[in-house]
Length: 290
Image (tube, rainbow, N blue to C red; front, side, top):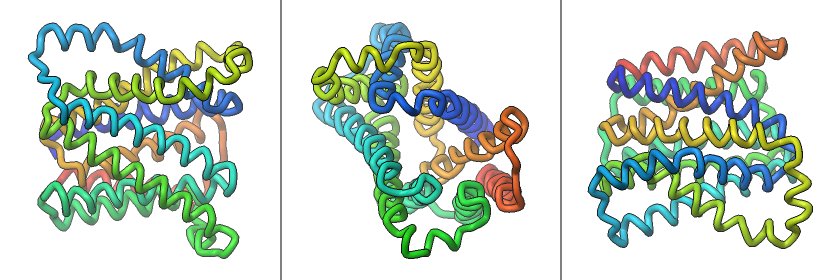
């Protein structure tokens, strides 16, 4: 992976960690907040999209439109699946399995379907990152994922991780093969996601409006950072960075979120999270050198 691509993925990880910290403050709002920050994101990035549409020759062929719509549906399915997993199982089980299997399945899919070359250092880096994610999220208690009461969360986590892999591979195909401009791809996908959610919110419009009272400043912040982080990932993919390396490298956000929790929120960091940070750091070094 080139230095430029690695820097873009690092910036994306920083944006991802930041917007997740902000979104946690509005977690009680639920799907309405997801719709709100999606709408904010579309409004914020619309001028950039307009500039690209005016100055770049984008061919709106059927495969391009289909790719964007399916991508929006997959991103929405991922969000709803993750939320449902949190409702029926422990977050401490669903989240690490989803964030661990997502890049793992993405990398395997890229090697099998996109015919990306594999290297020893690349595979080693990917495995280090996946292990590090698991260590951080479970605080070193990975064995608890194998317990009977945790298996429901494991199943939801694997399903969520599979959706992460599917939209990652599809979006890589969109920017690499169909040559869709990253900002246009992400904003169009986000807009389609918002449209798909609209009928659900219109069932109880008054409750939706009241739920967002006092939360719009967070929605605007997340609406800026969430698309920005993913657009940077798409730029890295478009410029030739392999999916099998970018997908696990994105999980640097776990390391950054852990450090933010340590220094900003004064959260305790045990040996498990510390070991996970070291594993992710080692994995990123291997990915950068592959």
